[in-house]
Length: 150
Image (cartoon, rainbow, N blue to C red; front, side):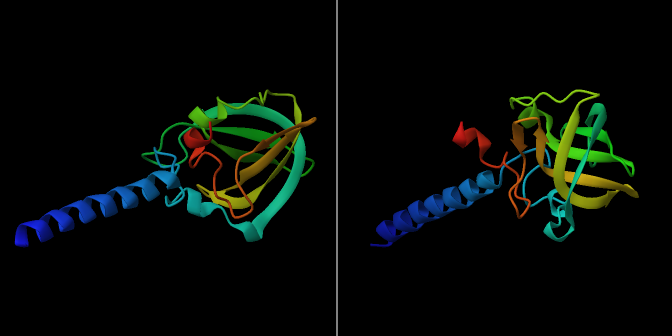
């Protein structure tokens, strides 16, 4: 009887552990890009705004220490040139939208301060009739669980 109970407890623990690990994977985006990380917590739905402008630069960056590479651009609007953080390089490079300097785009995102400078953490980028959706209305990244949706 004790042996049967030990087997049941072991199996239950294994299944529960797998379920917990599976939820962690759903948060997705290794390399610091997951929903629970400090970078993702920068997104604030109360500061969302939409800006239009011309792309000055598209760059590969590491937004915070320990994160994998990401893509951001410098957008020149009527009022300012602002850094727009798009997402992890592996996700952006697998999207159909190809963003290049001199193109005009519209960006919807959360206005934040990163390294003492204003920036937008993009939720959506519109170029002509193309829409690149990066985050939902609460700021949850589209790349979380992206491989499962492929």
